[in-house]
Image (tube, rainbow, N blue to C red; front, side):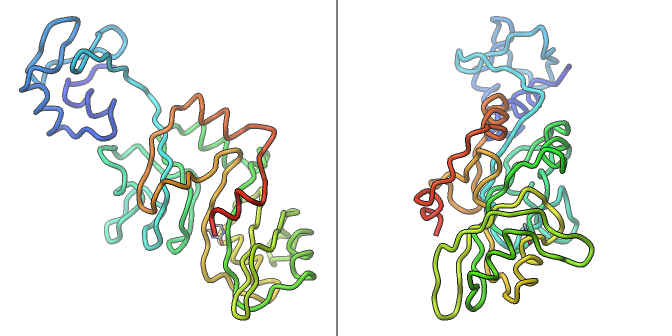
Length: 251
Ligand code: URA
């Protein structure tokens, strides 16, 4: 692909804007094929030109992957004229990025954002059965029988949920906290499952997708760029660490 140099730099580094790229160019920090270039409009070919910034080689990646710790109050959509969306939280990305699946506006936690349509398609495919784990704070007491019903699959009217894994993490007088792992991703699925057994989700956070856990040191509203190779390996890993101690660290 051919890009203007300032666009190329901002495409390669999520934290770089066209403006900061221009500043680097002005400073003489950018070389193309060994020659310092200060002109932001200079065209570079991603296949054949070698670009360095401060002597460090910059490689163009066609696909990029961001793991966002989604805050409540932000839409899982690409762009919205009225509300802020998850894309507004990622610096320097363009319109071809999108969230992989949706979390409700009030749901927090792990959300992937990419421009890799094939990965998104695969991850969302019902055939893939990628497990997703949610911490759900539910109203009242959710008893053993209700947990067993959730595990077995509950009738939600238009479909019956597939077997889920449910662990009771905490129980108080007013709420019960569950860790619920589902392999589907229907609209409001966890909330509807919990409602079907007579409770209500008061707070929901996704903490895992496949073998990818929400990093504990990633604060709400912030993100991390992941490398595609490692991400794909982690997502589809067969042996998934499901230990209770790890889950408890999200409470
Ligand atoms: N299930 C829900 O009910 N909401 C979400 O955001 C994700 C899963």
